[in-house]
Image (cartoon, rainbow, N blue to C red; front, side, top):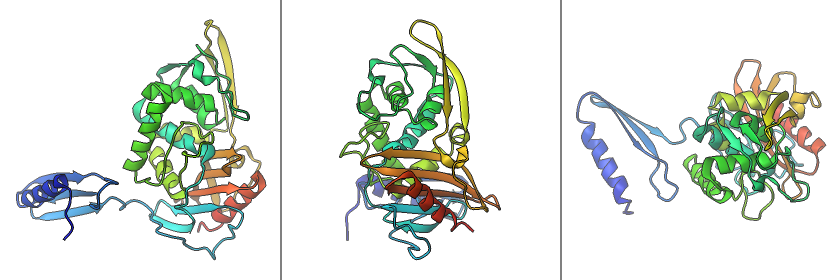
Length: 323
């Protein structure tokens, strides 16, 4: 008989004892990636008890699913998740570790909204001056002051890597500490095949995730109305204050071709929004939230296509599977 963690054993013992009493009680054993004990929430109503598995409201994908249903040969990995009925409709290499590029910013935005307030004022440090060739930048300068809401528009719409630095330092004080928080939060969501080392997704061999983990992170971010609002926005204009106290205008257009009108989704599908990502190492990547004609919601992920045309063609092949 396998031994289990003493803490878990105490919690389980307490659960069975307390169930004998009357009244409404709730007990939770949290998800723990380092044990073999499954996470459960226990609800006691006199003599009745309900145990809710960690993945009760999640789509699961232990392996490839429906590979004959869509031609996804131009993508290294892809997934389509019915989040209304908690069903995985398609899965290709969804647990394969890949570079996520700017899909990383989904986790960055999630933590910003979880631990921050949209109206908070952020001040840009010297670290926003990223020198890496090809880095997408909003153009923030040291001393610039913006609200978190403004920074998140730059992060999710324009995919600014300097916006990612601002969020990391605002939440955790440094990129290093924020990266630790990203990984802790990923594990708490069940995204155990993920490791982040920065808030923006610029290439690092130790920075990786999977299609399935991105689905988990994206679904967590969707609990915030502000996240849904920003990923659905096509055009954004605002102004902030620079280090000299002067007003500077910011204007962003979405990088999502479905929202900008550059690509049409299948006729029965409405794309609500999502996040794009592109680097040489990651290829072209995209994660979307979409609804069908009945208002049922789906998350779709495509990772590592050779170019943008292939990316949107592969994504449409997934979206065509939505009933």
